[in-house]
Length: 320
Ligand code: ATR
Image (cartoon, rainbow, N blue to C red; front, side, top):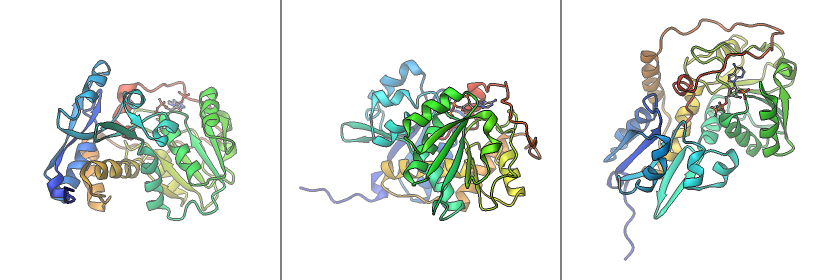
């Protein structure tokens, strides 16, 4: 006999975020807020899983009582081979959300919709007639952003990276609308750019600011930063000072969480101002002083030699 559909309250169960380290993750704060808000008999936990335990942990997910999980550094690429990834996760080359579907452990990448969701909320209609976007960086986050932009029909996307070869490799994966550019070309590309996205770790606490000048951007441009520590990066501060619309890394973090929650608990949750305030308060409590202003150096587009340590970055740019 067919079972009646369960309500969210009846569904219950647990989910978690796996990473190594995982202490930094704000996902428990976000998901446990929604669990409480919807009166679900569930829990969202942190699970520290070392790389050599990853396969075993995933194989035992159901036995451990989990409906699914988020995945953060350093496992986002490794989980592809251990799960059944959807087209999106395959195209991006990384997954951040896993769920059990009967005996199948499926995976997807919700950083894509996290980025798009933040953008849609901050600048509704941004994609109407969007001709040119510039993506700074060529890592996993840049791949998720580029995938999202291609899907929304952006006509020309320039991927600018300190290591040009990585920009070239990323552009090749996403077709003729995506072209690589050298780091030194950055500011020169801004004229006519309607959307600028930083996916590098520059501007993150403890890192140098992005060496760019926003003056050539049109007044209608939108600026996005995926870094959320500090909450207002020097890039976002400079874009605001220039009167541009902005979307920040926290917005992306909150929006990327929506789909995982709905896959596990059967309810589509909302990114509310109250939730944002809750996570903001947590980030502020953990962070020291926020840098005051962007170091604007008009023609200085020389790449910084400072390479960010993984552990440091894991605190501030884990778009789970
Ligand atoms: P993620 O998966 O989070 O995107 P990643 O693959 O380590 O992380 O990518 C980090 C991005 O930040 C890269 O584009 C990196 O440039 P390189 O490919 O040249 O390493 C960029 N990045 C990090 N530190 C930088 C710096 N000091 N100056 C310029 N770019 C930097």
